[in-house]
Amino acid sequence: MHINDAVFLEDLCPKFRFRQWRKSIHKFTEKSCIYCGKTSESIDHIIPRSQGGLSTTENCVPACLSCNGDKSDENALCWYRRQKFYDPRRAMAIRAWLEGDLRLAIRLLQWANPNFKVKNKNLAKDNSEYTAA
Ligand SMILES: [Zn+2]
Image (cartoon, rainbow, N blue to C red; front, side):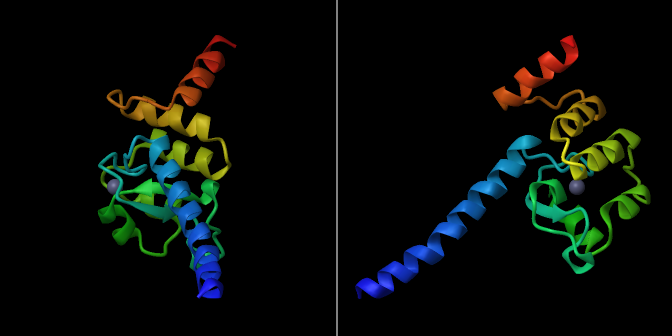
């Protein structure tokens, strides 16, 4: 019984961490799809796993189910260029995100969507320092 419990906890912890990580991804954009700006309900791989894309923060963006499903396992930048809602600022944001510059990505998303508000205090603080520099 004790052994089974131990195994169960070992399994549970990575899942819990994974859930926290997913939450943090959505938090960056305040649950808005990086592609179209609608509510993000899923995590999308910019470079699909089938093409060697990793499940890292740099390669994972918040996306709505519609974009995620439509994109399927295509490279996000190629797919996004063909969309009706294509916005070069968002395309730049996706590229910045992929390069690990989330701060720049969020600034570009704010630029693309004036209603977009950053509630993450650390990021907002960093942004003001960025602007002042
Ligand atoms: Zn979308």
